[in-house]
Amino acid sequence: MERNITCIICPRGCPLICEIKCGKVYVWGNTCPKGEQYGKDECLSPMRSVTSVLRISNRDDTMVSVKTSVPVSKYRIFDVMQKIRFGEVAAPVKIGDVLIKDVFGADIIATKEIN
Amino acid sequence: MINHDIVVVGGGPAGMAAAIAAYDNGVRDVVILDREKNLGGILQQCIHNGFGLHKFGEELTGPEYANIYSKKVAERGIEVYNETTVTDISKEKIITATNSNGILKIKAKAVILAMGCRERSRGALNIAGTRPAGIYSAGTAQKLINCEGYSVGERVVILGSGDIGLIMARRMTLEGAKVEAVCELMSYSGGLTRNIVQCLNDFNIPLYLSTTVVEIHGEERLEGVTVAKVDSKNQILEDTKRYIPCDTLLLSVGLIPENELTRSIGIELNNITNGAEVNQNRQSNIDGVFACGNVLHVHDLVDYVSDESEIAGKSAAKYVNGQLSGGKEIDVKAENGIRYVLPQKINLENTEDIALLMRVDKPYDRVQITVKAGEVILANVKRIRAVPGEMEKIIIKKEGLVNICDSITVGLEEI
Image (tube, rainbow over all chains, first blue to last red; front, side, top):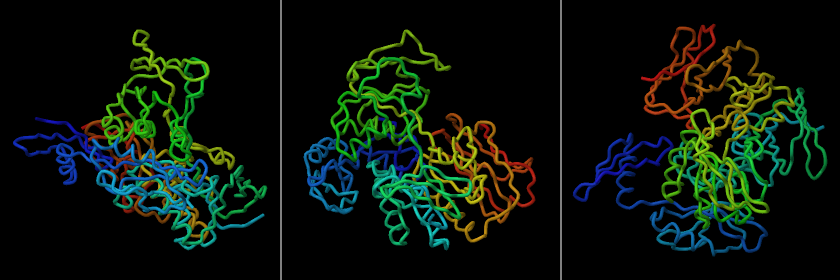
Protein backbone atom coordinates (compact mmCIF):
# COMPACT_ATOMS: atom_id res chain seq x y z
CA MET A 1 0.00 0.00 0.00
CA GLU A 2 1.28 3.48 -0.86
CA ARG A 3 0.36 6.71 0.89
CA ASN A 4 1.13 10.27 -0.13
CA ILE A 5 1.87 12.39 2.92
CA THR A 6 3.09 15.96 3.20
CA CYS A 7 5.83 16.27 5.80
CA ILE A 8 5.05 18.91 8.42
CA ILE A 9 8.23 18.78 10.47
CA CYS A 10 9.34 22.12 9.01
CA PRO A 11 7.75 24.79 6.78
CA ARG A 12 9.32 23.30 3.67
CA GLY A 13 6.58 20.63 3.45
CA CYS A 14 8.31 17.82 1.53
CA PRO A 15 5.91 15.53 -0.35
CA LEU A 16 6.58 12.02 0.99
CA ILE A 17 5.65 8.73 -0.55
CA CYS A 18 5.27 6.02 2.09
CA GLU A 19 5.08 2.39 1.12
CA ILE A 20 3.85 -0.08 3.70
CA LYS A 21 5.15 -3.58 2.99
CA CYS A 22 5.27 -6.63 5.29
CA GLY A 23 4.72 -4.51 8.41
CA LYS A 24 7.47 -2.05 7.51
CA VAL A 25 7.26 1.52 6.22
CA TYR A 26 9.56 2.76 3.45
CA VAL A 27 9.75 6.52 2.88
CA TRP A 28 10.77 8.47 -0.24
CA GLY A 29 10.80 12.18 -1.00
CA ASN A 30 12.19 13.33 2.35
CA THR A 31 15.14 15.73 2.38
CA CYS A 32 16.19 15.11 5.99
CA PRO A 33 16.21 12.19 8.46
CA LYS A 34 13.42 13.79 10.48
CA GLY A 35 11.21 13.51 7.40
CA GLU A 36 11.78 9.77 7.15
CA GLN A 37 10.85 9.34 10.80
CA TYR A 38 7.79 11.55 10.31
CA GLY A 39 6.61 9.41 7.38
CA LYS A 40 6.97 6.25 9.43
CA ASP A 41 5.22 7.68 12.49
CA GLU A 42 2.44 9.15 10.38
CA CYS A 43 1.67 5.73 8.90
CA LEU A 44 1.96 3.77 12.15
CA SER A 45 0.75 6.09 14.93
CA PRO A 46 0.09 9.72 13.96
CA MET A 47 0.54 12.12 16.89
CA ARG A 48 -0.51 15.76 17.31
CA SER A 49 0.05 18.47 19.86
CA VAL A 50 -3.26 20.01 20.89
CA THR A 51 -3.52 23.68 21.83
CA SER A 52 -6.57 25.40 23.25
CA VAL A 53 -7.65 27.71 26.07
CA LEU A 54 -9.01 27.27 29.60
CA ARG A 55 -11.27 29.72 31.40
CA ILE A 56 -9.82 31.65 34.34
CA SER A 57 -12.44 31.38 37.09
CA ASN A 58 -11.42 34.49 39.03
CA ARG A 59 -11.02 36.93 36.11
CA ASP A 60 -13.63 38.36 33.71
CA ASP A 61 -13.38 37.35 30.06
CA THR A 62 -9.90 35.92 30.53
CA MET A 63 -8.56 32.71 29.07
CA VAL A 64 -5.21 31.03 29.56
CA SER A 65 -3.76 29.32 26.52
CA VAL A 66 -2.71 25.70 27.03
CA LYS A 67 -1.03 22.84 25.20
CA THR A 68 -0.51 19.13 25.66
CA SER A 69 2.90 18.52 27.27
CA VAL A 70 3.61 15.87 24.63
CA PRO A 71 1.78 15.03 21.39
CA VAL A 72 -1.27 12.77 21.72
CA SER A 73 -2.74 10.31 19.24
CA LYS A 74 -4.43 12.08 16.36
CA TYR A 75 -7.53 9.97 17.05
CA ARG A 76 -7.73 11.36 20.62
CA ILE A 77 -7.78 15.08 19.72
CA PHE A 78 -11.50 15.51 20.38
CA ASP A 79 -11.32 13.50 23.60
CA VAL A 80 -8.58 15.85 24.81
CA MET A 81 -10.68 18.87 23.78
CA GLN A 82 -13.62 17.51 25.77
CA LYS A 83 -11.47 17.52 28.93
CA ILE A 84 -10.13 21.01 28.25
CA ARG A 85 -13.48 22.54 27.36
CA PHE A 86 -15.01 22.01 30.79
CA GLY A 87 -11.85 22.77 32.73
CA GLU A 88 -11.37 25.93 34.76
CA VAL A 89 -8.42 27.27 36.74
CA ALA A 90 -7.79 30.19 39.06
CA ALA A 91 -5.17 32.87 38.42
CA PRO A 92 -2.27 33.36 38.95
CA VAL A 93 -0.96 30.94 36.35
CA LYS A 94 2.64 30.62 35.15
CA ILE A 95 3.94 29.23 31.85
CA GLY A 96 4.55 25.51 32.26
CA ASP A 97 2.09 25.03 35.17
CA VAL A 98 0.26 21.70 34.91
CA LEU A 99 -3.41 22.63 34.83
CA ILE A 100 -4.97 19.22 34.12
CA LYS A 101 -3.06 16.02 34.85
CA ASP A 102 -2.78 12.96 32.62
CA VAL A 103 -5.14 13.43 29.70
CA PHE A 104 -4.59 10.49 27.31
CA GLY A 105 -0.91 10.35 28.18
CA ALA A 106 -0.24 14.10 28.29
CA ASP A 107 -0.59 16.85 30.86
CA ILE A 108 -2.37 20.07 29.92
CA ILE A 109 0.09 22.88 30.62
CA ALA A 110 -0.21 26.66 30.54
CA THR A 111 1.49 28.59 27.72
CA LYS A 112 0.62 32.07 28.99
CA GLU A 113 1.17 33.95 32.20
CA ILE A 114 -1.96 35.26 33.93
CA ASN A 115 -1.31 37.43 36.98
CA MET B 1 8.66 67.10 25.79
CA ILE B 2 10.48 63.92 26.86
CA ASN B 3 13.75 62.91 25.18
CA HIS B 4 14.76 59.34 24.36
CA ASP B 5 17.54 57.95 22.20
CA ILE B 6 15.48 55.26 20.48
CA VAL B 7 11.70 55.00 20.39
CA VAL B 8 10.19 51.74 19.16
CA VAL B 9 6.60 52.02 17.98
CA GLY B 10 4.83 48.71 18.64
CA GLY B 11 5.47 45.99 21.22
CA GLY B 12 4.87 42.88 19.13
CA PRO B 13 7.60 40.45 18.07
CA ALA B 14 9.22 43.06 15.81
CA GLY B 15 9.25 45.86 18.36
CA MET B 16 10.54 43.66 21.18
CA ALA B 17 13.36 42.12 19.12
CA ALA B 18 14.37 45.55 17.79
CA ALA B 19 14.42 47.14 21.25
CA ILE B 20 16.50 44.29 22.67
CA ALA B 21 18.99 44.45 19.79
CA ALA B 22 19.30 48.24 20.14
CA TYR B 23 20.01 47.85 23.86
CA ASP B 24 22.50 45.04 23.33
CA ASN B 25 24.35 47.18 20.79
CA GLY B 26 25.06 49.86 23.33
CA VAL B 27 22.10 52.22 23.50
CA ARG B 28 20.60 52.16 26.99
CA ASP B 29 17.85 54.73 26.50
CA VAL B 30 15.39 52.64 24.47
CA VAL B 31 11.63 52.77 25.01
CA ILE B 32 8.73 50.79 23.53
CA LEU B 33 5.33 52.39 22.95
CA ASP B 34 2.52 49.84 22.71
CA ARG B 35 -1.24 50.05 22.33
CA GLU B 36 -2.01 46.94 24.40
CA LYS B 37 -1.83 46.11 28.09
CA ASN B 38 0.77 43.39 27.59
CA LEU B 39 3.68 43.07 25.18
CA GLY B 40 3.50 40.41 22.47
CA GLY B 41 1.15 41.89 19.90
CA ILE B 42 -0.72 39.38 17.79
CA LEU B 43 1.27 36.46 19.28
CA GLN B 44 -0.95 36.62 22.37
CA GLN B 45 -3.90 35.31 20.38
CA CYS B 46 -1.89 32.83 18.28
CA ILE B 47 -2.17 29.98 20.78
CA HIS B 48 -1.24 27.28 18.23
CA ASN B 49 2.30 25.97 18.06
CA GLY B 50 4.93 26.03 15.34
CA PHE B 51 6.65 29.27 16.32
CA GLY B 52 10.38 29.36 16.97
CA LEU B 53 11.48 26.35 14.92
CA HIS B 54 14.18 28.37 13.15
CA LYS B 55 15.13 30.64 16.02
CA PHE B 56 15.03 28.26 18.98
CA GLY B 57 14.86 24.81 17.37
CA GLU B 58 11.62 23.94 19.13
CA GLU B 59 7.92 24.32 18.56
CA LEU B 60 6.54 27.07 20.74
CA THR B 61 3.06 28.56 20.94
CA GLY B 62 2.61 32.27 20.20
CA PRO B 63 2.34 33.36 23.85
CA GLU B 64 5.45 31.31 24.76
CA TYR B 65 7.43 32.89 21.91
CA ALA B 66 6.31 36.35 23.04
CA ASN B 67 7.24 35.56 26.63
CA ILE B 68 10.87 34.80 25.72
CA TYR B 69 11.19 38.32 24.32
CA SER B 70 9.11 40.16 26.93
CA LYS B 71 11.32 38.61 29.62
CA LYS B 72 14.43 39.89 27.81
CA VAL B 73 12.83 43.35 27.60
CA ALA B 74 12.16 43.29 31.36
CA GLU B 75 15.64 41.94 32.24
CA ARG B 76 17.23 44.88 30.44
CA GLY B 77 14.96 47.36 32.14
CA ILE B 78 13.75 48.68 28.80
CA GLU B 79 10.92 51.09 29.56
CA VAL B 80 7.53 50.16 28.09
CA TYR B 81 4.67 52.63 27.73
CA ASN B 82 1.66 50.26 27.79
CA GLU B 83 -1.81 51.18 26.56
CA THR B 84 -0.25 54.07 24.70
CA THR B 85 -1.30 54.84 21.15
CA VAL B 86 0.97 56.78 18.84
CA THR B 87 -1.05 59.23 16.77
CA ASP B 88 1.64 61.08 14.85
CA ILE B 89 5.34 61.09 14.08
CA SER B 90 6.95 64.12 12.47
CA LYS B 91 9.97 64.35 10.16
CA GLU B 92 11.90 65.78 13.11
CA LYS B 93 11.20 62.50 14.97
CA ILE B 94 8.79 64.00 17.44
CA ILE B 95 6.32 61.33 18.46
CA THR B 96 2.83 62.24 19.66
CA ALA B 97 1.05 59.58 21.69
CA THR B 98 -1.95 59.33 23.97
CA ASN B 99 -2.65 57.27 27.06
CA SER B 100 -4.63 57.64 30.27
CA ASN B 101 -2.28 60.43 31.40
CA GLY B 102 -3.12 62.55 28.38
CA ILE B 103 -1.02 63.56 25.42
CA LEU B 104 2.66 62.68 25.33
CA LYS B 105 5.38 64.27 23.18
CA ILE B 106 8.65 62.43 22.79
CA LYS B 107 11.69 63.62 20.85
CA ALA B 108 13.75 60.68 19.60
CA LYS B 109 17.18 60.44 18.01
CA ALA B 110 16.03 57.34 16.12
CA VAL B 111 12.61 55.78 15.57
CA ILE B 112 11.92 52.12 14.84
CA LEU B 113 8.57 51.48 13.19
CA ALA B 114 7.14 48.10 14.24
CA MET B 115 3.39 48.56 14.01
CA GLY B 116 2.66 45.27 12.28
CA CYS B 117 -0.24 44.81 9.90
CA ARG B 118 -4.00 44.62 9.88
CA GLU B 119 -6.49 42.41 8.12
CA ARG B 120 -8.23 43.31 4.89
CA SER B 121 -11.94 43.69 5.66
CA ARG B 122 -15.22 42.91 3.90
CA GLY B 123 -15.37 46.46 2.59
CA ALA B 124 -12.34 45.83 0.41
CA LEU B 125 -13.93 42.80 -1.26
CA ASN B 126 -17.17 44.12 -2.76
CA ILE B 127 -19.23 41.07 -1.85
CA ALA B 128 -22.90 41.62 -2.68
CA GLY B 129 -25.73 41.07 -0.21
CA THR B 130 -26.97 42.08 3.22
CA ARG B 131 -24.95 43.14 6.25
CA PRO B 132 -25.90 40.66 8.98
CA ALA B 133 -23.98 39.76 12.15
CA GLY B 134 -21.69 36.75 11.95
CA ILE B 135 -19.09 38.08 9.53
CA TYR B 136 -15.67 38.38 11.12
CA SER B 137 -12.13 38.80 9.99
CA ALA B 138 -10.33 35.60 10.95
CA GLY B 139 -8.08 37.43 13.40
CA THR B 140 -11.02 39.04 15.20
CA ALA B 141 -12.65 35.64 15.63
CA GLN B 142 -9.30 34.33 16.88
CA LYS B 143 -9.09 37.04 19.53
CA LEU B 144 -12.70 36.53 20.64
CA ILE B 145 -12.22 32.78 21.07
CA ASN B 146 -8.65 32.57 22.34
CA CYS B 147 -8.34 35.65 24.52
CA GLU B 148 -11.84 36.51 25.59
CA GLY B 149 -13.51 33.10 25.58
CA TYR B 150 -16.50 33.78 23.36
CA SER B 151 -18.06 31.28 21.00
CA VAL B 152 -18.19 32.79 17.54
CA GLY B 153 -20.45 30.48 15.54
CA GLU B 154 -21.54 26.94 14.75
CA ARG B 155 -21.59 26.52 10.98
CA VAL B 156 -18.70 28.27 9.34
CA VAL B 157 -17.49 29.18 5.87
CA ILE B 158 -14.00 30.61 5.57
CA LEU B 159 -13.02 32.80 2.65
CA GLY B 160 -9.28 32.82 2.01
CA SER B 161 -6.77 30.07 2.65
CA GLY B 162 -3.96 32.15 4.11
CA ASP B 163 -2.46 30.86 7.32
CA ILE B 164 -4.88 32.62 9.67
CA GLY B 165 -7.85 31.18 7.76
CA LEU B 166 -6.41 27.67 7.96
CA ILE B 167 -5.54 27.98 11.65
CA MET B 168 -9.05 29.22 12.39
CA ALA B 169 -10.63 26.35 10.44
CA ARG B 170 -8.97 23.95 12.89
CA ARG B 171 -9.64 26.14 15.92
CA MET B 172 -13.36 26.45 15.17
CA THR B 173 -13.54 22.68 14.56
CA LEU B 174 -11.86 21.94 17.90
CA GLU B 175 -14.34 24.25 19.62
CA GLY B 176 -17.21 22.20 18.21
CA ALA B 177 -18.16 24.21 15.13
CA LYS B 178 -18.63 22.64 11.70
CA VAL B 179 -16.47 24.24 9.04
CA GLU B 180 -18.39 23.68 5.82
CA ALA B 181 -15.80 25.02 3.41
CA VAL B 182 -12.62 26.99 2.97
CA CYS B 183 -12.84 28.93 -0.31
CA GLU B 184 -9.80 30.33 -2.09
CA LEU B 185 -10.04 32.72 -5.03
CA MET B 186 -6.63 31.75 -6.38
CA SER B 187 -5.84 28.39 -7.93
CA TYR B 188 -3.49 27.59 -5.03
CA SER B 189 -3.44 28.22 -1.30
CA GLY B 190 -1.29 31.03 0.06
CA GLY B 191 -0.87 29.19 3.37
CA LEU B 192 2.03 27.07 4.55
CA THR B 193 1.80 23.44 3.49
CA ARG B 194 1.96 22.22 7.05
CA ASN B 195 -1.12 24.26 7.88
CA ILE B 196 -3.08 22.75 5.00
CA VAL B 197 -2.14 19.28 6.27
CA GLN B 198 -2.63 19.87 9.99
CA CYS B 199 -5.60 22.21 9.90
CA LEU B 200 -7.67 20.98 6.95
CA ASN B 201 -6.69 17.44 5.96
CA ASP B 202 -6.61 16.19 9.57
CA PHE B 203 -10.25 17.20 10.00
CA ASN B 204 -11.50 16.50 6.46
CA ILE B 205 -12.34 20.16 5.89
CA PRO B 206 -12.80 20.76 2.14
CA LEU B 207 -10.65 23.41 0.41
CA TYR B 208 -12.23 24.79 -2.76
CA LEU B 209 -9.70 26.51 -5.00
CA SER B 210 -10.64 29.11 -7.66
CA THR B 211 -13.79 29.65 -5.63
CA THR B 212 -15.13 32.75 -3.92
CA VAL B 213 -18.11 34.02 -1.97
CA VAL B 214 -20.35 36.02 -4.32
CA GLU B 215 -23.33 36.79 -2.09
CA ILE B 216 -24.14 37.07 1.59
CA HIS B 217 -27.63 36.15 2.86
CA GLY B 218 -29.47 36.85 6.12
CA GLU B 219 -31.07 39.77 7.93
CA GLU B 220 -30.13 39.80 11.63
CA ARG B 221 -27.65 36.94 11.57
CA LEU B 222 -25.89 35.39 8.61
CA GLU B 223 -27.98 32.56 7.13
CA GLY B 224 -25.82 31.44 4.27
CA VAL B 225 -23.46 32.39 1.48
CA THR B 226 -23.49 31.80 -2.25
CA VAL B 227 -20.16 30.58 -3.56
CA ALA B 228 -19.06 30.17 -7.18
CA LYS B 229 -16.03 29.09 -9.13
CA VAL B 230 -14.02 31.68 -11.05
CA ASP B 231 -12.12 31.41 -14.32
CA SER B 232 -8.47 32.28 -14.85
CA LYS B 233 -9.39 35.98 -15.03
CA ASN B 234 -11.28 35.79 -11.72
CA GLN B 235 -14.62 36.14 -13.52
CA ILE B 236 -17.48 34.35 -11.77
CA LEU B 237 -18.81 31.26 -13.56
CA GLU B 238 -22.58 31.72 -13.16
CA ASP B 239 -23.54 28.06 -13.58
CA THR B 240 -21.28 27.00 -10.69
CA LYS B 241 -23.12 29.10 -8.11
CA ARG B 242 -24.26 27.18 -5.03
CA TYR B 243 -25.72 28.05 -1.66
CA ILE B 244 -24.04 26.99 1.60
CA PRO B 245 -26.08 27.51 4.78
CA CYS B 246 -23.91 28.91 7.60
CA ASP B 247 -24.12 31.31 10.54
CA THR B 248 -20.53 32.53 10.38
CA LEU B 249 -18.24 33.77 7.64
CA LEU B 250 -14.57 34.30 8.44
CA LEU B 251 -12.52 36.46 6.12
CA SER B 252 -8.84 35.66 5.76
CA VAL B 253 -8.18 37.66 2.66
CA GLY B 254 -4.84 39.29 3.15
CA LEU B 255 -2.86 41.46 5.50
CA ILE B 256 -1.97 45.09 4.93
CA PRO B 257 1.01 46.70 6.69
CA GLU B 258 -0.27 49.39 9.05
CA ASN B 259 1.57 52.41 7.70
CA GLU B 260 -0.51 55.48 8.62
CA LEU B 261 2.31 56.70 10.89
CA THR B 262 4.94 55.93 8.27
CA ARG B 263 3.07 58.20 5.86
CA SER B 264 2.76 60.93 8.50
CA ILE B 265 6.57 61.08 8.64
CA GLY B 266 6.61 61.56 4.88
CA ILE B 267 8.02 58.17 3.93
CA GLU B 268 7.00 56.85 0.55
CA LEU B 269 5.53 53.37 0.45
CA ASN B 270 6.40 50.64 -1.99
CA ASN B 271 3.30 49.74 -4.00
CA ILE B 272 3.92 45.97 -3.83
CA THR B 273 4.92 45.48 -0.18
CA ASN B 274 2.74 48.40 1.01
CA GLY B 275 5.59 49.18 3.40
CA ALA B 276 8.46 51.63 3.48
CA GLU B 277 11.40 51.21 1.11
CA VAL B 278 14.51 50.45 3.11
CA ASN B 279 18.18 49.62 2.71
CA GLN B 280 19.86 46.57 4.25
CA ASN B 281 20.01 48.33 7.62
CA ARG B 282 16.22 48.63 7.47
CA GLN B 283 16.62 52.39 7.35
CA SER B 284 14.01 54.29 5.33
CA ASN B 285 14.65 57.27 3.07
CA ILE B 286 14.48 59.46 6.19
CA ASP B 287 17.65 59.34 8.25
CA GLY B 288 17.18 57.71 11.63
CA VAL B 289 13.81 56.15 10.84
CA PHE B 290 13.91 52.37 10.66
CA ALA B 291 11.19 49.78 10.03
CA CYS B 292 10.93 46.04 10.62
CA GLY B 293 8.48 43.16 10.77
CA ASN B 294 5.05 43.10 9.19
CA VAL B 295 4.84 46.87 8.89
CA LEU B 296 7.61 46.59 6.31
CA HIS B 297 6.38 43.52 4.44
CA VAL B 298 4.12 40.69 5.58
CA HIS B 299 6.18 37.72 6.78
CA ASP B 300 5.10 34.09 6.94
CA LEU B 301 7.16 33.14 10.00
CA VAL B 302 7.67 35.13 13.20
CA ASP B 303 11.24 33.80 13.36
CA TYR B 304 12.06 35.88 10.28
CA VAL B 305 10.37 38.91 11.86
CA SER B 306 12.70 38.60 14.85
CA ASP B 307 15.75 38.29 12.58
CA GLU B 308 14.80 41.36 10.59
CA SER B 309 14.02 43.37 13.71
CA GLU B 310 17.42 42.58 15.20
CA ILE B 311 18.95 44.17 12.11
CA ALA B 312 16.77 47.28 12.54
CA GLY B 313 17.59 47.52 16.27
CA LYS B 314 21.31 47.11 15.72
CA SER B 315 21.29 49.69 12.91
CA ALA B 316 19.34 52.20 15.00
CA ALA B 317 21.95 51.83 17.77
CA LYS B 318 24.74 52.43 15.25
CA TYR B 319 22.89 55.49 13.98
CA VAL B 320 22.54 56.95 17.47
CA ASN B 321 26.25 56.32 18.08
CA GLY B 322 27.15 58.08 14.84
CA GLN B 323 28.38 54.93 13.09
CA LEU B 324 25.83 54.95 10.31
CA SER B 325 25.92 57.85 7.94
CA GLY B 326 26.25 58.72 4.29
CA GLY B 327 27.33 56.20 1.70
CA LYS B 328 26.23 55.60 -1.86
CA GLU B 329 23.02 53.63 -2.35
CA ILE B 330 22.12 51.38 -5.25
CA ASP B 331 18.70 49.93 -6.12
CA VAL B 332 17.69 46.29 -5.81
CA LYS B 333 15.07 45.39 -8.40
CA ALA B 334 12.77 42.40 -8.75
CA GLU B 335 12.50 40.96 -12.25
CA ASN B 336 11.13 37.93 -14.00
CA GLY B 337 9.01 35.83 -11.63
CA ILE B 338 9.99 37.67 -8.45
CA ARG B 339 7.22 39.80 -6.95
CA TYR B 340 9.40 41.84 -4.66
CA VAL B 341 12.83 41.92 -3.04
CA LEU B 342 13.68 43.49 0.27
CA PRO B 343 15.76 45.53 0.98
CA GLN B 344 14.98 47.73 -2.03
CA LYS B 345 18.29 49.58 -1.65
CA ILE B 346 21.80 48.65 -0.64
CA ASN B 347 24.09 51.14 1.02
CA LEU B 348 27.65 50.39 -0.06
CA GLU B 349 29.28 51.96 3.00
CA ASN B 350 30.74 49.35 5.40
CA THR B 351 28.52 46.54 4.17
CA GLU B 352 28.39 43.10 5.68
CA ASP B 353 26.92 39.99 4.02
CA ILE B 354 23.34 40.82 3.07
CA ALA B 355 20.28 38.56 3.12
CA LEU B 356 17.91 39.39 0.29
CA LEU B 357 14.33 38.41 1.11
CA MET B 358 11.92 37.80 -1.73
CA ARG B 359 8.68 36.19 -2.86
CA VAL B 360 7.98 34.52 -6.18
CA ASP B 361 4.87 35.65 -8.08
CA LYS B 362 3.23 32.20 -8.39
CA PRO B 363 4.05 28.56 -7.53
CA TYR B 364 6.97 27.06 -9.46
CA ASP B 365 8.61 23.64 -9.65
CA ARG B 366 12.37 23.62 -10.13
CA VAL B 367 13.65 27.16 -10.47
CA GLN B 368 16.94 28.96 -10.36
CA ILE B 369 17.01 32.40 -8.74
CA THR B 370 19.88 34.65 -9.78
CA VAL B 371 21.13 37.87 -8.21
CA LYS B 372 23.07 40.04 -10.66
CA ALA B 373 24.84 43.38 -10.71
CA GLY B 374 24.92 44.22 -14.40
CA GLU B 375 26.39 41.10 -15.99
CA VAL B 376 28.07 39.88 -12.82
CA ILE B 377 26.36 37.06 -10.92
CA LEU B 378 26.45 37.70 -7.16
CA ALA B 379 24.48 34.68 -6.03
CA ASN B 380 22.51 31.92 -7.52
CA VAL B 381 20.31 29.30 -5.86
CA LYS B 382 18.20 26.41 -7.06
CA ARG B 383 14.88 25.40 -5.53
CA ILE B 384 12.89 22.23 -6.13
CA ARG B 385 9.76 24.16 -5.31
CA ALA B 386 9.04 27.85 -4.76
CA VAL B 387 5.66 29.24 -3.69
CA PRO B 388 4.52 32.81 -2.94
CA GLY B 389 3.51 31.84 0.61
CA GLU B 390 7.06 30.97 1.58
CA MET B 391 9.66 33.71 1.60
CA GLU B 392 12.96 32.96 -0.13
CA LYS B 393 16.23 34.17 1.32
CA ILE B 394 19.48 34.58 -0.63
CA ILE B 395 22.71 35.75 0.98
CA ILE B 396 25.04 37.96 -1.04
CA LYS B 397 28.61 38.14 0.19
CA LYS B 398 30.12 41.51 1.02
CA GLU B 399 33.07 40.75 -1.27
CA GLY B 400 30.64 40.80 -4.20
CA LEU B 401 29.53 44.32 -3.37
CA VAL B 402 32.93 45.92 -3.88
CA ASN B 403 33.16 48.13 -6.98
CA ILE B 404 29.50 47.89 -7.87
CA CYS B 405 28.04 50.74 -9.88
CA ASP B 406 24.92 49.19 -11.35
CA SER B 407 21.68 48.37 -9.65
CA ILE B 408 21.19 44.79 -8.50
CA THR B 409 18.52 42.64 -10.11
CA VAL B 410 16.93 39.43 -8.89
CA GLY B 411 15.11 37.15 -11.30
CA LEU B 412 14.19 33.51 -11.70
CA GLU B 413 14.16 31.03 -14.53
CA GLU B 414 12.55 27.62 -14.69
CA ILE B 415 15.00 24.76 -15.07
